[in-house]
Amino acid sequence: MQESSLMAVLLAEIRQLALKTSKRVKWHVIASIALAGSNAPDEVAHVLRYALQHDANGDVQGTAARRIARETREGLVKSGQLM
Image (cartoon, rainbow, N blue to C red; front, side, top):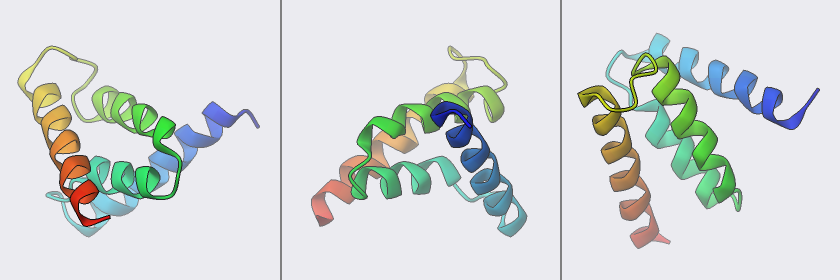
């Protein structure tokens, strides 16, 4: 299995698990922080891209996309202060 398709499967599983737990869970923030903290910061772009495709319905200019990007950025900045 290709690395990018493996990441897509992993992100789909993380998203589904988070959404089963609560509709308000910001799964993309949690996944981004986990990847950045585990020495895989290059994968954060995949998380953001996947979130934009599935949670913002591919609209990278809309309010949902801006919210997702802002939440992810804020989560990464705040988690960086803890490390």
